[in-house]
Length: 190
Ligand code: AMP
Image (cartoon, rainbow, N blue to C red; front, side):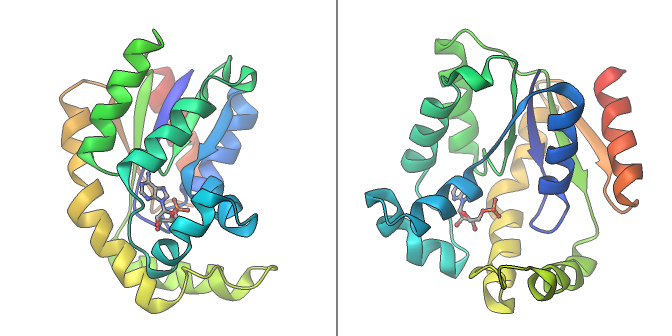
């Protein structure tokens, strides 16, 4: 099974992706996590993107598309994968269509976790204060506002993009974690 998870920062994409990994035996591919790992390891890509991540802006389409293209070829993705945090722009979605076509792979669904953006700030502030490793560098209020604005402007249009393909499944992300997961499973198995 090959899926995309869509939703603004704080919608619970990471949490739901972990559950989907266990349920379907597929791999979670989070571009945010891969980029943070590159920053921590000070790789050439990491050095290039560190300040962009900190500001809550988007890394270039070229960088993230290359990362994903390489990653889906790894043997651990044979069973399928969940893209978490990618694509984030129409250009990335088009690049993804192209690279999947070249690899002769198809998508099974695009799950949009829809939430009330007004309460996201509270959730993210909690995540920042509870994190055992300390707050993520991009979890400060300034960067969060930026990330929400970037989501509305650049990523939200993907909802229409995937609605047109018939792959879009929208679930209510305001339920508790179990409720959201049950809705996702139902949407995928319908
Ligand atoms: P996330 O963990 O998905 O919220 O991503 C954290 C940060 O990594 C984002 O604020 C961006 O700076 C960067 N990032 C992650 N995925 C992408 C992507 N698909 N395109 C551009 N930038 C990304």
